[in-house]
Length: 453
Image 1 (cartoon, one colour):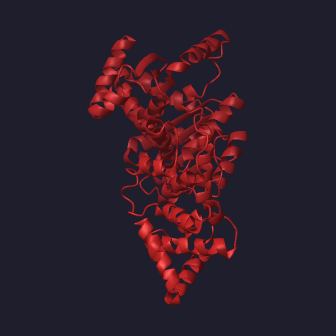
Image 2 (cartoon, rainbow, N blue to C red):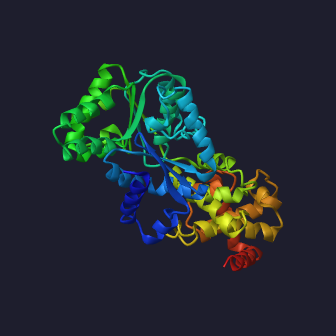
Image 3 (cartoon, helix red, strand yellow):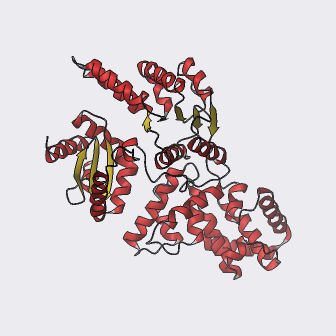
């Protein structure tokens, strides 16, 4: 089958899975095309960085499934920019001329080369998991298996890829990353399309997963609906473990909460080290945003209030945080010539926040109105200055945040320079007491509320 025929059949599959608008936007022939298909690696070329990111973040699973149906094999997508084709060709030539095909690459290990320890931002919520992963990368077998768990989007996959990339870069160990549903799909596919050569295919499958040095398997919870997949993974686990090969597993829940998996698997998961990753706290979210922005050459000055806005509103997982950053940058590029302000950020993200309260981020608007009223700066309000000319407006702003938004005391504190909840409570209570007998203050509050309305 030629590349043209392959791409056409792939597009037919994709078109049935997404809306016509999405298909025309992201898979039109001017912006997205097949470059090559070799060794189960599908390389496609796109015209813009925005398209590349969108395909990687939203359509990679659909694309993989669609192409796997066409090729009857498990494929990996490699998406490159039109402007990077020459560099890509050069790398391919260098690999061939230097006979480096024997050395494994991130690509044929199913690893994302961008997920490294250097690009991982460490905070209180992931510190232990990060250190455990570094130990495994530097000394495979130190803990076996390593079991990482936490909610979706907190960094488990990043750490797993980082371990794999480190090992490929610094050792000659053979590494393979796979999700449990892909493992099951590959195993069941053998029997679904069984023929006289099925025994050879079974042997090839076993060799693929048992003749490696490091197996990294993600989303192990999806094994729960596949009894035969659990059986095969059990034997694969034993073979690797008994051969002192490193096993790394990730799940969205702890071992004790994987009730739908066989007990013999759960027992083995507890043999090594388990590490939990919790949702990122405010400081970590801010660090992640700043780190992501540091790699955006087109972005120069992003106001702190924009960073705080994103950090406060996207607090559940890192993927949503990164998606918010991408959306704000894209929106500013399209509608404000790259200039980013708080108003631009609010407008760009309003659809993603529409299920939140009406006052979802009026904290910053309250701060601005109060600062304008008292002729002080936002930096002074958030700073440590305890002078009454600054401290009193700060207390009024805190009081209004409690009155006009549904944010908690700790959440409000994060907007005011990271003050703790007891300080916020004290400020709120002081203004409430003052309002009982202070008519001038009552008029000030009325004026401010009118401005805010």
